[in-house]
Length: 114
Length: 113
Image (cartoon, rainbow over all chains, first blue to last red; front, side, top):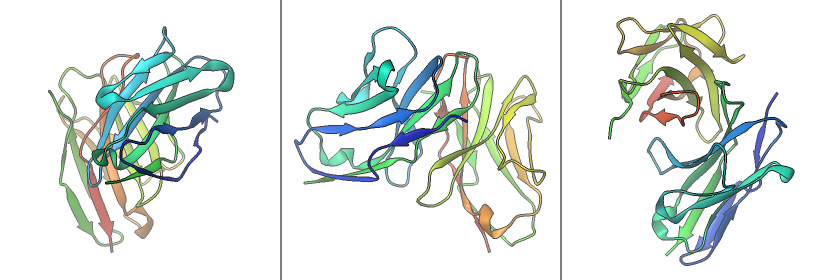
């Protein structure tokens, strides 16, 4: 079965620090990759997605992620975090172009200190 | 921007009772999903629905669960006889085509007492 792992359970940063959240998946074939964010008390919102093409994808709010196929990774980055980025971040993988199931990682809680 | 809407936002029920969680997916979307998130834990896939039938389901989605799209707009999740461990946030999601992301609703918090 496919699995998605996220390296950090809880990350604490000060404002303006750089962010990198790790995501690895276990499936070797074609994958679609996503990062979702869940602000406190809210639903999951799409940050960015990768289907094909340029492995460096840019999303909303200054986030970007890089797909490295050889490492089965899709790490999320932001050069300078803000207090408002405090949230839970979930990596998700959909296997194959016609697969239906989106498998989510366990999430990484990001706390940004003002 | 169109949204996935879910009702109610919070449902409290007694163990053994039936509950129906309701969702209105985005109108031109074709694939519909239910996920759940037990407090502090990961987002777990329950079921996907396409072309008026279940296309995939997880081992969590046992005989006590069912889904329906009764009228072309609503998408419901029924839990027949709730258990304490069913307490969770239930998220409905939908998407358009096979290469598209999920759009989530705000969720229904189910509390089973």
